[in-house]
Image 1 (tube, rainbow, N blue to C red):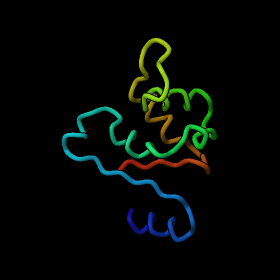
Image 2: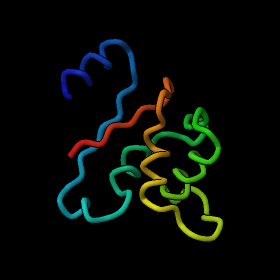
Image 3: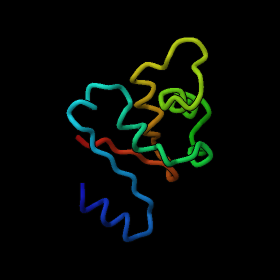
Image 4: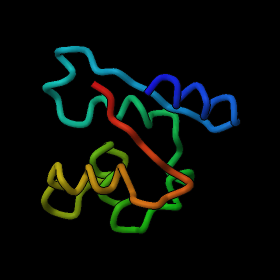
Length: 92
């Protein structure tokens, strides 16, 4: 995985990485929030609106419309298939 990240960096791709500490691994979306803390919402604009909304609610950037998103919805929003603009990988 590290070799792939190094290659991406050499090619000029912005690479965001985060590794959760043991206590953080029990908290929902802490690592995702850390990973995307410096990424403005406008840069996530390539996501379809439903995915963007779920991700922003999970990151506490916007208020939920009723019930908070379920973990599978957040996982789908944070790893959009076929997106050339945004790709996220979770590392343990």
